Amino acid sequence: MQTSKPHLLTLPREIRDDIFSYLVLPPIVYSSAPDPNPYSFYRHNHNVNSDAYLDTRVFVPARAPSSILATSHQLRDEMLDMTARLINAMYIATNKSRIELEKGILLNLEKIAERSNDDGSFRITLEMQRPIRGSMGAYVPIRDTPSPRLVSMAPLLGRLRKIKFVVWGSWEWWNPVSPEIIVQRLKKAKLRAKAKKIQAASAQGADASAQSLQDDDGAPALESRVDPLFVAIGLLMKHFPLVEDISVDVLIHMSDLRTWDLPDVSYEGIRPWLDGPIYPPDGRRLKKAYRRLMVYESFGSSRLSVFYHKLEKWEENKGQSKNRVIHVSEGSSEILDEKDELPEEPPFTKVYDRVETDAGHNG
Image (cartoon, rainbow, N blue to C red):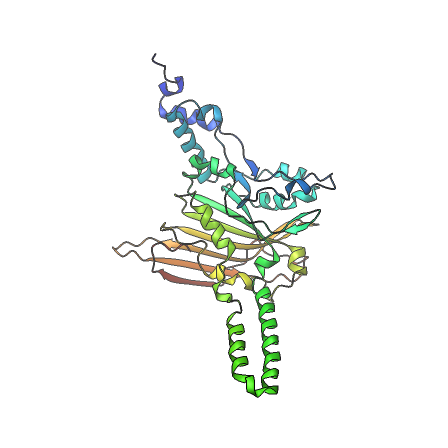
């Protein structure tokens, strides 16, 4: 029995695209785990053993209706192409009214911060080494796989050209050096105690010195640490094969910035990631990479301020050489007081070029 083709296919492609533009669904935010009940004292109990994924939240600026996707392969591809074009064109504006309605809910402050900075990009929220708190304490989950919801959007993800990551990090991520330094100080204290024993017992000095050297070699190597954000973005980028424009916004609460024991330059602990590639090289040729560090003041003015940003743009070579020139711009500003009036973004004070020696380098 021969089935008739859908009536939409009898129309010209231009008319079908116009129809598809009216069928696109509005933006939505998906969460990889259910939000806790703010009215339940034991609201965290059911989440203690739940799965934790790389993506905490996913903001989809435009969606294709399932009724069209299930009609035919051709209409499905055309609808997905239309949705991807709308997302790549950054046509979605922030839903300010919805943000205002949720300002009174403390649990949604981070969602408010993320939405207030939306530019229409497909956005993924990541949490770096943040503990999950429950009635029995807190633990840091292992996040090494994307959520099923994100994986199910693979047909759309494979068409996107740009993506934005929003990162909330813990103190351990912002200041990764401190725990190792504490361990090294303990090691050195033990070495000093052994040195005193060596002086007191010269007969066993050679054996004690050899043992002390072994203990010193066992100290953790700071240079060998791999940034978890570097790894997480690399794992997620495997699902976005066509992305050539990537943005990463690292957010921190003003209260955390003031109370955490961070270095004088607050981002010194993540300097290796800021100076290096955003994620492990995968052979793609990026066109733009933008990193920003932002502080969020959730009470009173409720504002987002950028205190460091770095923009990298790749210049396509016109010759046969595979190496490309990268134009790099950096800028930073100090945050002295919560009442300070800061510009939306500090000016670029450091501008330079570098040559990409490896075609697979990513920022």
